[in-house]
Length: 184
Image 1: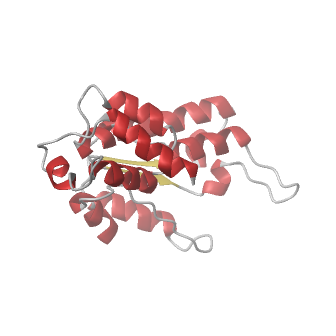
Image 2: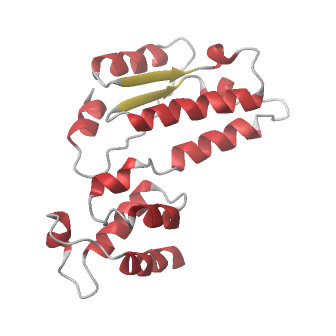
């Protein structure tokens, strides 16, 4: 429940990832479902292999994408990936797994949710789409680092004005900071 509370009150990144690991039948799914129910989040969804029996890989991927897109529409959401090995169709002999499902999950788990840049409120409305496109699939923590750098302003000391809403980050300065981070 602490994780759900952290998401509700976070001033930094409202995205949290948690991995529950343990032997089969130990209650991992039940624990995750309990956290989802008790969180009172408006959107809680479990993605499991049982829901996708008989479906082809493209259909499975489409269903997974829909769950993530629906989660983006909610102010608070939890997505539970139940028994990820079975979702990926992992087989130890070989080894074999579904590359299509694996890539779908990787993209969705790394993708910046569309509302994050708007919620930061540091760009003018006309610059949000350009900033999101420039970020591509940058991990969220790296995004916050770039925004923090850009908020300092070209001459430094502008962060307070940016975070209070009195000033916005210019897209050209944001691109400069992004280039500095991407270079290393």
